[in-house]
Amino acid sequence: MKEEDLRRCQIQEWYPLFKPYSIRTLFHPIPDDFRRYILGEAPTATSHADGGDLPPPFRLPLPASGLDPLPRSTSTIDPISVLDSDPSAFIEESDSESDHRAPSFPDLESSVEQSIAALGGAVFPKLNWSSPKDAAWIAADGSLRCTSFAEISLLLHSSDRAVHDLCHAADSCSDRSSSTNFSFFLALRKFYHALRPEMEFRCFVCRRRLLGISQREITAFYPSLVDRRRELRRLVEDFFDEVVCPRFGLDDYTFDIYVNGNGKIKLLDFNPWGAFTLPLLFSWEELETEGFGEAKEVEFRLVETQCGVRPGLKTAVPYDYLDTSEGSGWDQFFRMADEELKMQMMEDAEPVK
Image (cartoon, rainbow, N blue to C red; front, top):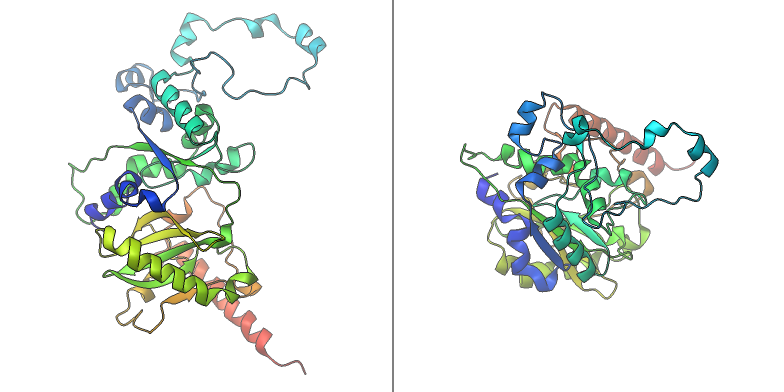
């Protein structure tokens, strides 16, 4: 992967070219103090040096309104127990603790809250390349739906994917240099409750040719997709020929799409070819084999039986950034899983005696 490939796949780079075909998105430059907050660092390098090696304790940003950033119900609080508690618990912070007061980002908070309102009151946050999907467990409803600046801050601070974007995005670039530098953005995308995971697909493009299409959600079997394979293939091929290929400047890349109920396609994301991008129901080895994709029809892979479901990987490492190279632990795991799947399929195919 070249640095130019990585730059072209940043959402703030490709979105203006495909705005009519994508989900409405608003952008906010990330100031350095908020970047350091996401990474769990001290507000400035100087303050970190003065405070030793320990990072500051995590606290949600202090809202400009002064209200609780994540309001909680008080219906379960016993007023008697509060009265009987230690009065020292209510003493304000001493001067010695002032360095650890909650941070505040009033300008960014104000602009983000305005964007949330403009996008209907709920958004899906994302940085240049990644969304904090790995931190969804910390959200109240287990999703990336955010209705406030505090919720966005909590997700980003808890996400390894966010750290990867801010610190390690260029690690896989073959032409990376010490001068490599990126400007970081917070992208807020309109949140839709009704999106169906089975209608999201990843498309693989090599030498400006559409080689393959894969179901994006590979942890479940959706019987209706198998019957619609031909129809969906035609929709994706037309969208690639008419919209994506004429506008996107790279030769090798992947792009993610969502197919609406009326057959309209929404462009969700672009990813570099290879590197940290997950090949899903393909493998990078076969995608890069000479002659692959020369058949009359684009290879369209779906989870076609319940036995074909891939297990979800619940780890602290972003799914798209797992090391699946030959010899790695995950490579061995997938090989064993494939062998087990083949054995199950052979057993299912045996006639009942």
